[in-house]
Image 1: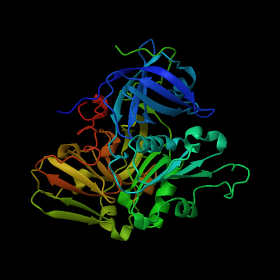
Image 2: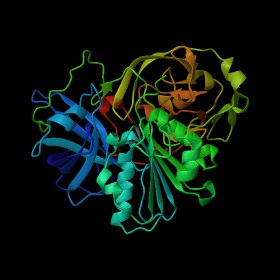
Image 3: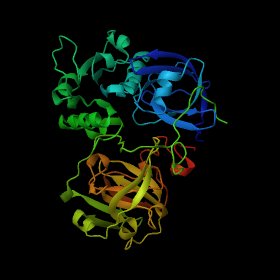
Length: 242
Length: 198
């Protein structure tokens, strides 16, 4: 039988600032069935007159029993994200539905090398994969290319600073590089992917997540480098800008 | 009754023409599962394969010579955005099916790049679906499914396959890409059929 995904009450346990505009929400969802790294949840908010709004957010970490984490970036002029980053407090309730999505996922039993390419808040589902790898004691080699505007926009900074065997991280600053950086600030290039990624003949599983333009560019560059289209999984958010 | 989220006000929108759970966008978000396929027009074709294994094919030139319509429709993505009053240019599926003999009830739409999606054949006929090559008076961009995509506006937008290559007619339903990855088999936005079991 197929399980209907029901809306479940979730209570905010804890909130952590990631950047000036992004917060990680730790939520208790009694009866949470567990999830795969890369899946997302729908969050529904209800006003006291019954008006509701819902949005999808990537899960940022493996489940800890009934406890889940999402990281939310404030969308300027948004309807749901400013509530989740600025208004909600521990003890407050929202509704959650999920987990959702069975494509953009990494399973710890997988043996292929992994290339993670994240732009901005596109790091969130990739971080869930990194955390699941660690939790499962997987020795699958991971490489992460993390494109971000500047150091102030870095999510999970302390955690990613700790050395982790088999995980190589390259930060690609698009707007302002930290002092002493060898790479000038700029968009993701084919050289970045050639240096920080895997050769195509290693047949890595590639996960690309970020704003539409970033994902479009990164996926095209991976194809240029000879990666097979069926090994490139993408998750995009936002408009094309055209 | 839903659980009230303390302090949530929300932003009420004018106009009651959005399906439940949807919000309005003015831009045009992009969703796809992998890299954008690039299909040269001289190699493009659209095919209908019947359950009797007969294939009807159209080249790009043959497609462009068919009678065009410019439907203006609302589109609803399962990821919650809706876009109202979008205008496309293309050919009604009724035109493609004029000479197709079939008793099949199901259609599996397949795309360049390997994407598939399924729907009852009747949801493609009687003026409900088009193969389009233009959006808002301009050639359809590859990110949005160009050179040609399917448009089935009355279902969630994942049924409107980008980079459409053909339709296989089947006597039995055959779930497609998202339908086997936890999404609803039919996908009616007005009944909020987002996920398996909804």
